[in-house]
Length: 262
Image 1 (tube, rainbow, N blue to C red):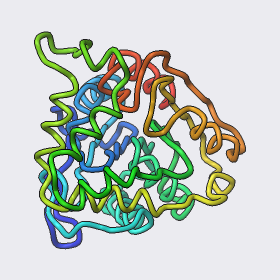
Image 2: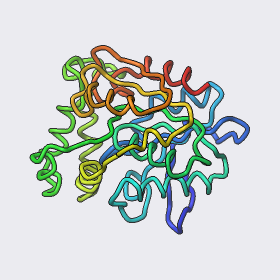
Image 3: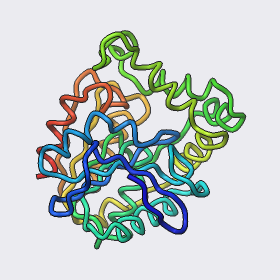
């Protein structure tokens, strides 16, 4: 699905079906250097289980045009504007990694467009290793290699792809390698400089947080620090799963997401 927002093309994946405005809207926001395709195992499922999912390509990502946004608050303001443009709000907002930071900011800065939050791979801060940040700034292939190595749990390094015969890590790396020069660095720098502060205490909508026991990028300890600031939160653990949980454990995530969205 394509639309024009702020005079540029924005692309969204809707699970292969036409948007049904009578169904609750779910907006899914991807992580650093990625695009809507990370949600391919969830959008179609939600579309056939009573929701209208829309996995967005952020500006300059995937098939969306526009200039890259360099800070998490700027991205959050853009997402909230898009929700208003869609005129289907308030929406259930799902964010992964960088997308979880964006979702937090949307809920805190624009509560009128946010009905519920689901955060995956979330933490109050997301510092980026200097080696990774440097490789991304130089547009080196080392950046996607490091990201995919750190983002997957042990089992995903050797097996577990829902499509037989494909290697999960290589698929994720191919996705990151498709990003235009500067995209990965832009996103990692935005995460690296972001400080959530007391933002958790400013959010009143229902919140579900999913954390993988083998997440090296936003480890459970970091997620716990974020969760401690919420008034009320449903914390769900995935044993043996890493940062790319919606790809590593698509069946579990679909069921947990469906329950949380009700």
